[in-house]
Image (cartoon, rainbow, N blue to C red; front, side):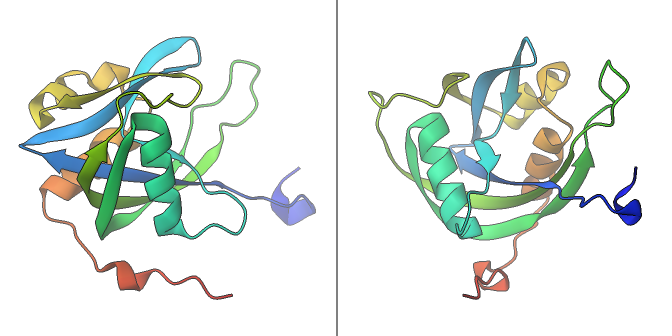
Length: 159
């Protein structure tokens, strides 16, 4: 049944943060689907949460880094591959942000599934493309490196 036939369709809304320092990109290594994959700090928007606040929270929870968002990189849609049982993949709507690192808490316990935070050069990250959690990982970084920066004021929470 499609959503047009009465089923409500809703994508997974996620945020991701591209943090660059000294030419290296902050990444997380995490377990997903039985694999050890790479991603930027990213996660789901929580109920009643502002997108920018979600990006700051997810970055801290997944990497131990406190960051300051500096720009909006872009919004991305992606549907994961069809599952082995034939059911459709999940549809994601990702909001990506650029941020600068402020401080790190190496003793902070990271989110479940996160193995470690690490810094990779863009070339190192690109060389690990087979381990990216999704195609969004490199696309967001590539757009950031190409200069995609929009003011955070484009995003508004209207309450």
